[in-house]
Length: 209
Image (cartoon, rainbow, N blue to C red; front, side, top):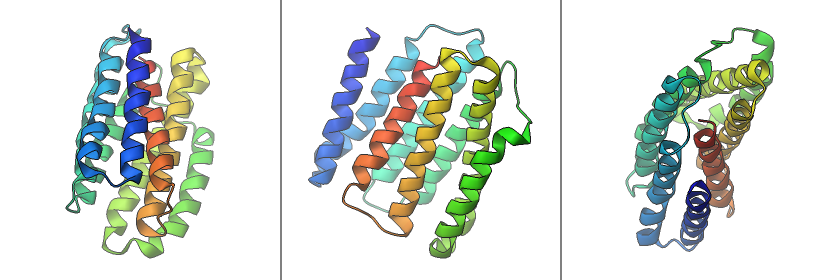
């Protein structure tokens, strides 16, 4: 069953990206939420791990991600609302990653994320204007998100933790491209890069359950 849902996710994601490039709003509004809904469906059928709390938190994070997807695709500017939805999703993911053996306090594990975040914010913040505070807050939660994902992988070193780390990395890549595209320069392939890495991240987090 899982493999058929994954195939559906890939097809739906590709159709969204295609119609987004063609600026076909009707089909964009169909396939963007549908892709995330299919990922949520995949999460629901995964076997529960050692901590059922983990599955509930990941599932809840996916729900808030779906809300964020809807806000960001609306024709009116709902960037702050979308950012807030993803902020909550990341907090839920952080709690999930920290469940069991965590939280992970080793600062050395946060160093790569901290260096990257500092450099990226140095580039981005001069362009963010009135959204500077929301962007800083979101970047901070994203940093902790990657930190805790790294800690989970370092200590557990199992398949689930590998999915978590890879998913977190893809999420950071996706959000970085989204931020660069919104505030600095939107390239023609921005949608392809943002959404392929975003849904790849969410898919891996669903598979980590």
